[in-house]
Length: 394
Ligand code: SF4
Image 1 (spheres, rainbow, N blue to C red):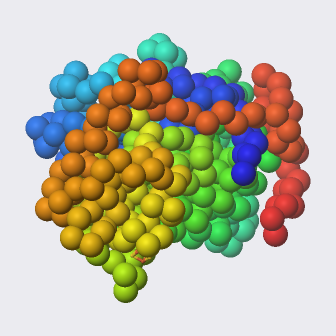
Image 2: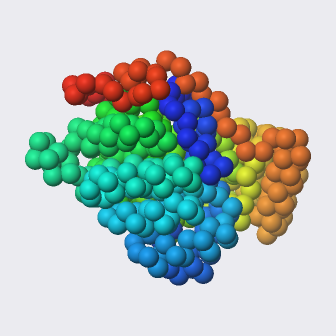
């Protein structure tokens, strides 16, 4: 499947480019108390280890804002400060972080937003305009009766236009709803009327499993339609899982190739090895590898090697002995109790070889031409009239 990505402006969050032809980046947010710098730095370290490219922390009060310099100094990826209500926290954070997330709807008087704009401009960093179904402006709620996709899109477009009116364009936008259909429609409506880069996500998606499925449906649909420049999978779980799910979504759509892609057979009556345990263990033990590699774990040799042809390397259960294969060809037989360790060593070796050849993490190119955006491709986007376009997928 070839994905034609929506043409968006490009912004820079620290060293990470977002929008334009930049790869869709994977973000997460710390679940720790930002004031607890040790716990936050430790979680950031874990997130960086699994490839998280941008990390956001909540800044609910002065003490959290004061913790930012220490946190920022300990990390290698860009940091975003998440601010609600108190614009002074944004002013303070802007001096330290790489991007400030605000919801103009809950910052209050317009002069406060203008102060935030001045602060981010002074520090050369962008804003994420984060519109959320749970915190929509009252007039829009009255107009639409509920936080509908149209209300979310209008709220975001209003915010964008207001910021443009004071000459500010260094921003990305998110429109979060927890219902998959509503989130898709809101993003779609916005994307048809603006070419700012989009941070996509399904808010409060749920627990690890439910949230992963919901996010895969919502974000997968949007991305397959070319919408989305950076993503966060929101899970009521360890944020490390959010990053893993994010990459899996991008890998499934072939938008990013990163790390190990474990192909495990579903098992059946012929299974000779503990496929489930081995596949899980592989994902855990090889999570640090960035080089894209397809690794198969197949229960038996009957169909195993054939089914594993697409894999760079893999194992299959055999009678008494396991089989190690590369690109569908038998390499050697391995005693069952050594199978797992052998595979791990071989995968690490293969990853090193690929890296040395310059085949590290790859980004699948996707052209950005031809996306049927109604937005004028000019320096001043989001200037469509008040008429709401009809969603093409309805
Ligand atoms: S690889 Fe073997 S064990 Fe796994 S599903 Fe296929 S036939 Fe069954």
